[in-house]
Structures are given as structure tokens and as C-alpha cells.
Length: 292
Image (tube, rainbow, N blue to C red; front, side):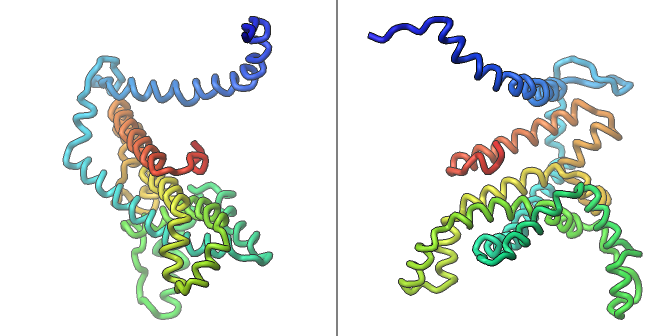
């Protein structure tokens, strides 16, 4: 018969864990849980005639979210996020495959090319694109110098320019999980496919892609979700012509001074994020690859 553990033994076993985990748990409570609760509570509040937040319960903020103007922005946001994710997959997969499968010393160089953009703030890099694509930017000067155009071309303030900025910002988030998945490929499976007479295209679609599907889906989640909230990209490159959900939230908290409505929009965005992560988990995705 097993002896019951004494209180002293229980404390001696739990105290190290409490000392290690306790500060982190408290930090998460104040920096993550408490702000989320505050945002959730504020989403049910009202504003008075002076735009001050009044803590009177109402669901009218969520009712405003289904207006026709907002629905158009939701659709536009999802479309831009989808196109951005698709381009990141098409561009990032070959690049990640080359990095993961190369055996030369250039592997580290290629990997560094993916990491280097993280060394500079994304806001600064997007302003660099604005300068490059502007009417007096380098691209227009080059096109006029070689005689392709006779006057500056308006590249900015278009949906395509916003997508370009999004792809530029998020391509590393696609390449890194793809690189991890492709690097784990078993060479013997590729050799077996070749020995059985499968052509490279068939090997790609029937062996490589299924085995790296977790990396593809992980990269899609890491690109699609934050793309909905990157308001500064559409502000700088789209000029307000390509509003996204992030722009709506930013506008409510700043120019409109309607914090409850902005909080309601934030809650919806959080719920969309949780839904996509849950779908990823149900499909057997590795949560560690998302940082969850």
C-alpha cells in the first residue's frame, strides 16, 4: 500500500515549479489576459456625445459590424490576404526547397537572405517601397531614362501595390516553416519514387507536397492572419484605397475616437484567428510551428 505524501514533500516538489512558472504566468496574466478582457468588456460599452466611453452594456457595436460598407471591407481584406498568401506560397516554396535541399556552403547565405529583413523595422521597409515606387522614385526614373514611358507612372495607391507590400513583409514567414518541413524530407522516399519511374512533376505532387503539407498550412496561417491586421501597409502603399480590417480598427481608435466599436472589431479579428488556428490543429498541424 502506497504511503500518502506529506505536505512537506508536496511543497518541496511544487515550489521549484511555482518559482519557475509563477513569474511567467503573472506576466502573461497582466500583459495578455487582462488586456483581452478589457477589450472584450469595452466592445459592449457605449460612447456619449463627447466620445467618452460609457460603461453601459449594449450589443449595438456588434450590430454595426454587419453594415454593407463594413462587409465590403471584410471581403476586400480576405481577398488581399488570400492573394498575398497564395503568392507567398508560389514564390516561397521553390526558394525554401532550394535552401533546404542544397548541400553547398551557399545554404547559410540563402538562409541569411530570409532572416536579414527582420533586422529592420517593417514600417521603414514599407516607406522604402513608397519612395522606390513614387512618381519621382527610382523605378519611374529608370523607366523614363530607358524610354519605356514618357511621364511618371502612378504605381502607388492601388490594390496591387498593397499586395506587393504584404508579400514583401510576409514572405519570410512563409519560407521559414516551409524550410523546416522540406528539410525533414527523407531522401530515400525521393529515390524510391524515381526508381519506380515517377517523373519529377509526379514526385512533386504525390510525394513532396503531401509530406510538406504541414509546412505549407503553417506558413499560410502565419501569413493570412497577420495580413488582415497590417493596416500601415495599405495606409502607406494603398493610400486608403484598399482598406482592410486593420484599417477599420486603427481608424476607430484614432480619428473616429469610437473605442467600443474598435474593440468589437478587434474581438471579431481575434475570433477569426482562433478559428483558423483551431482548424489548423484539427488538421494535425504542429502548434509549436505557430509559436502557440
